[in-house]
Image 1 (cartoon, rainbow, N blue to C red):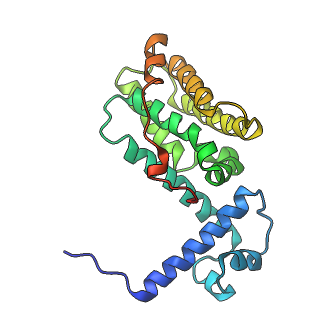
Image 2: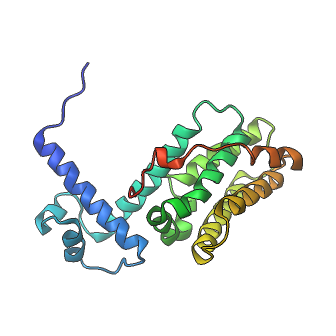
Length: 216
């Protein structure tokens, strides 16, 4: 059965919602969440009435903005790791790409960083995928960690602290730093040192292929 083609009204509503989400992501990236709804609608170039057609209030919009950013990044990682069989390599691949995101997509990075520790418990984006990959690594005998949730905490903490470090130290080599932390995490999870190093030296595709510049 063919899918229904969105009407002109549906497309206009989708554009309005996307504009509001984009505006909210910009404010979050700048650390400015204590703003009035009027400021958000002005930044999105939509009317106040249009806002309430989509969101009950500012908090709901900000939540949607964060979830949208997480889901976009998570979907990109899923696409880029499609067809990979080794859960250790999938985990490393995703972590290495996420580390490089901080410099290549600073607005998206700042949305993630300004959301803080809530990311680790989110049902969207990075956390559920990292949990999935860690559990798959344990089941496949690749990882030897006893508690996957504690392993996730280590990975999430490392990802957030790495992002902050790369913003505060712009001269630091982001690829080298990311690959080193990924290698250290793999070793902590039970991968032999030589193999962990080899995994983290494998070539990566460009994340820009799925998240072009300006996309939050």
